[in-house]
Length: 119
Image 1 (cartoon, rainbow, N blue to C red):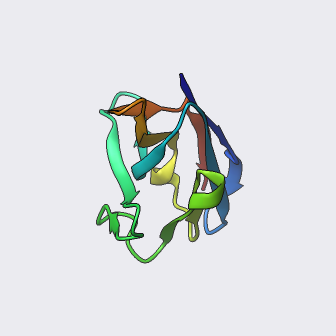
Image 2: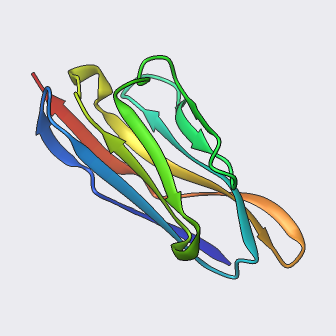
C-alpha cells in the first residue's frame, strides 16, 4: 500500500506565495513521474505541473513562469513552489505519483489540499 500526504495549502493574498509538499510512503520500489493537479469548484481537474524521475518538467500554460515543481527522490517527496498567486489559482490541489511497487506500476493520489487566493 502507498500513501501520498500533502501539506502546505492555505489562504494567501494575490501576489503572495505558497509551497506545497507531497510525501509518498509505503511499499515503494521507485517512483516515476510525479505531479500536481488542481480542481476548482464546478470545473474539471486539470494538470498543473509534472516532473519525471529525471527531473524533466512540464507546466500548464497558466502557471508557467510563476510555479516551479521539484522533487527530492531520497525523500520520495515532490514540491510545488507557487509565486505571484492569482485568485484564479484558487482550487484543491492534488498530488499524483506513478509508483512502482511489487513489480507493478500504478498511479496514486493524495487527499488534496485547499489553496485559496484572495483578491
